[in-house]
Every structure is written in structure tokens, then in C-alpha cells.
Image 1: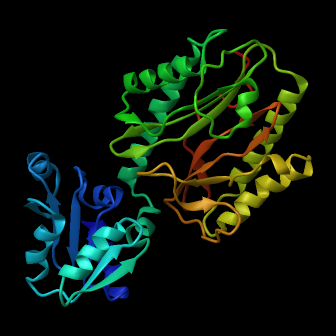
Image 2: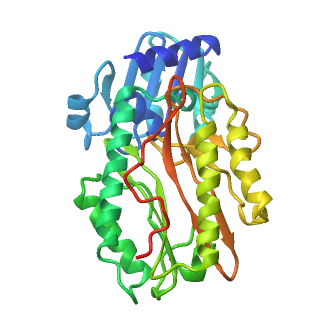
Length: 355
């Protein structure tokens, strides 16, 4: 398996003969399967998945190139015999995903084994998507676009944010999603000034801005799409701000190509918005990597000097949020290609739709 081979190369570079993985996302990425409280031990020759009896049968069908061991009781009890054959003297662990109490327990009981904290060994591999991953992300996007289109057909005056959110989740499932990538963000009117507002009992009224941010899960991969609408005729200010966001997003996407810094893409959009006097109302980064998680590296923001590479999949989502007035955001998913980039979310309407 290519992913295991790439990880082992990183382990050799870091002089880590064995690595314990407890992050479910990373376990799924490497093994193709995730149960509940699973763990994976990777050495330079073997890969072992520890799972309990609830998932044993499914794991045996889905997992290849991994030994599968039935876990009974605490993880430490299952790990100890494997670490002793052959004797492991250094064990890497995911510092951001192993609890302090479990770390203390391991330190106390794994005699003669040095615990080495690691960060990003698997996450950095996940930044470059292979063709299978890209195919799954594209399918998640198509599901989201279809669900959004079907939801908009049923939107009506006086509908509550919670109603629209529930309808959207239903349409995502109906369109083929394994689940929602995250709780949908649905906001009306002045509440759209909250970038990540939770759906409330607020009712939709004529002239309201409608902001919808949603995503689907398909084969373990996710999508993330934001569109902004107006119920009825849009005002001049609504049209002006939306046009500014469209311009900023288009300019940033045009700049995306291999070898350019993430921070540079952010500044392209931010400079356009700032020149028009709305810079202080754009308070988040321009975008983020997406794959098995909704937010993963790299990030299109100031301070991230990662160079874009072919196979990276990112969102581009400029937003303007004005307290007491409302907010707008446009978000698309972009694939970095060998020469330029490809917009993967093309089917959802981009011009300011008047519902």
C-alpha cells in the first residue's frame, strides 16, 4: 500500500522504528476502516490494527496489508506483547491525539520504551490527494449541489432557519450522502453577520439575505459549499457586496497554481476587499484544505507559507460580515493541478440568486 510506504519513509527520516496511531481519521486514511476506539501500530515491517469484537468481522473484510488483532480490555494490554516481539525501544505517538492520562499510563508501564511525540506525520501525507480520493470528493460535491438545489425549490416565506437546516440534511441523505460533513449553517437576515451561526427559530422574510453552508460525506471524504441568496429583490448594497466577494474569489482562484504560497492567495482576495473599505469585516482565512476532514492543512491564510502542490484540494471562501446588517460568503472547492487549478463545485449558482 503506497500510503504505508510513504509513512514508513517519514518514520525512517525521523528515526522512529514504531508509531502508534490513535486519531480515527488517520487510521481510516491508512487502513480504509475505522471502528470505535481503534488503534494502529506501524513498524518498518508490519502494520497492526487493534479493534474490538463489534467491528472484527467488518475489519477483516475491508482491511488489507494489516494484521488485525482483537482487542480485549485496555489498549495497553493489547499493545504490550506486540511491542516486545521484536523488542521496540522507541515508540512514536500522535501528540495531539493521545490523552495525557493515557500517556502517563504508557510511560509508567512500557518499561524500556522511549515515547516520542510526533505531529503531522500522517496529516502531511493527507495533503496530496490521489485519484481515488479526488473521485470521492467530487462525488461528495455533486451530492451537496443536488441537495442544495432540491432544498431551494422548497424554500418559502416564514420558514424557520431550523426547518431549512433539517430539510437540507434530509436532502443530503436522499442524494446519497453517508451523513452530513458538519451541522449545516443556515442564517437569515441580520443573523448572516455571524460567520458560523447555528440555525435558530428566526423566520425568513422578504428581502432577507439567506446564507447556507453545508457538506456531505461520501466514502469517508467530505465537501464544503457556501452559497448566499436573497428572498425577493436584492438591494443595491446586497448586490454590491456580493459582486465584491465574487470579484475577490475569482481573482484568488485565478492565482492558484503549483508553487505559490498559501498566504499569497489569501492576500489577493483580502487586498481587493480591503481596497473597497470592507477589510475589517473579513475576519477569517480565505480557505482551507479538505479531504477526510472539513478543515485540514494547508490553509489559505496569512502566516501559512506552504507551497501549493498538484493534488491539493482547498476551499476558497471570502466573506463580509457587517454587524446589524448581515453577511455574505461564497465558497467553492478547488483542485490544484499540474499547471493551474480546477473548480470542482461548478453546478451550484454563483450569481446572486433572487429566490
